[in-house]
Amino acid sequence: MHRTLRLGYTATVFLIFSSGLAQAAEPIPVPKPLAVPGQKVSGDTVSTPLPKPKHEQLPDEAASVAVEAASCDLSGVDFESIPPVRGEFSGDAGCGIETPVRITGIERESASVALKGSVTISCEFAKTFTQWLQSDVLPAAEKHFNGGIKSIATGPGYQCRRRNNQPDGKLSEHALGKAVDISGFSMLEGASVSVETDWGKDTPQGRFLEDIHKSACARFTTVLSPEGDEFHKSHLHVDIGCHGKTCTYLICQ
Ligand SMILES: [Zn+2]
Image (cartoon, rainbow, N blue to C red; front, side, top):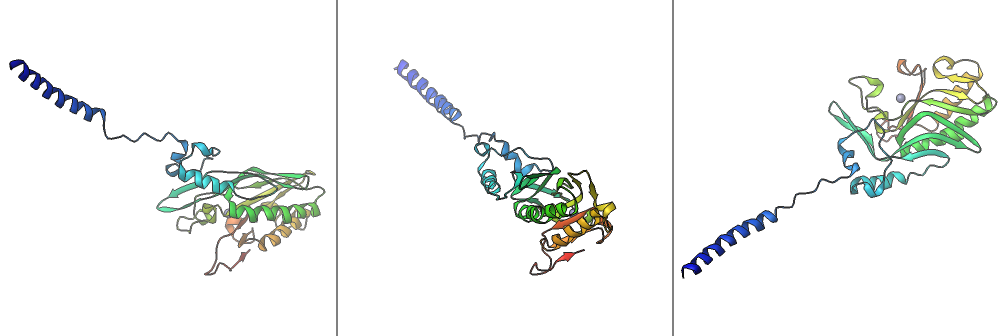
């Protein structure tokens, strides 16, 4: 009797203990930290280049966007699709590109033209920009110079900033990856073209710039040259921003 009671007590203690153990051994599942590099994408931003996407390592969201970015159809262009770019500044959450591409060069027939550094822009804008280079800018260079273009000096394309870096300005098209600045060209024959010093001159350089300015106005919604304003003395700005209610208003300066 005594022993039985003790056994019962022991059993009860054991049951309580083991039930405690059971609870301890079955904790609320702690979510494992997702050890995926892409998880940083939403928090980190990205003035610095992101690594090339590896689909199997990216979380669903980033992977789906990466697939979308990878579908950018650019022919004759040296480029890579990169993960979405996001940036914010002083309360503005509008910066970023959903389907960015990083372009390093343009091919045309047997010619290969480098973009000094590289240009990060949206896939949509890249189509217009590279078609303009291939169909208008390279032929214009061949017309005014013996041989084509060796390299093009550009800005970075994407920049999370306001127009003309003015503190109260609207968001720049650069902040959406829809704009590029071009400051000059190096020609295969050795000549160089500077927007700042050659603009408006009656020289091959000046006439070349006049030609590409004209063709740019037929393709982009905004073209700003040294004639435009004080902010564009040193470069040609082209973008596909929307002007007016129906986005049909064009700016060619
Ligand atoms: Zn610009």
